[in-house]
Length: 171
Image 1 (tube, rainbow, N blue to C red):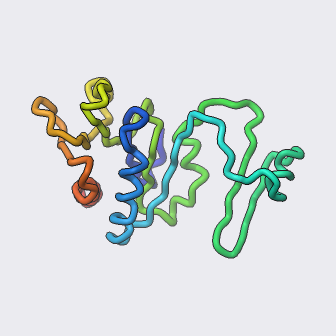
Image 2: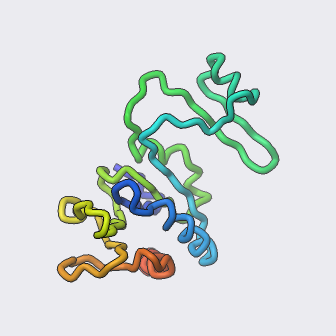
Image 3: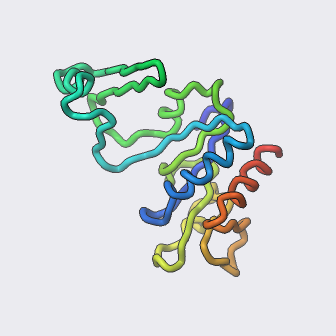
């Protein structure tokens, strides 16, 4: 279960639909509305946030289980997991300073139970997710879907998505 002290909104879609592209356009619009935005992105691949050859990377490779890299502009904590397992959204939320955020946007975790906007492009041939997921609250699509009972947003108009989010947060 997700903590009640933070607003969380997910973006669910198959790979290649444009989740990251939409978020890159949407986040500045939400910031203009004076919202403090956090983001959690689930990756299904091994990834490195540190660069091979840098001291922090080499120290982590040497066996440090946690490395906190910091400067006057930012800090990042890298934690090695002893037993690799699929992360849970509720656990990942505990790592954020939720008091400093108004909204946490989530890319991925589409199988977890929390409010999500589905992104869909019919031309890609993927099935719709909302019929099997009661937590999808709207559909952002590049073409109108006549039989969809959910609010429909234009995937190519991030201002519409922003307005939907702001309206939902006011309620």
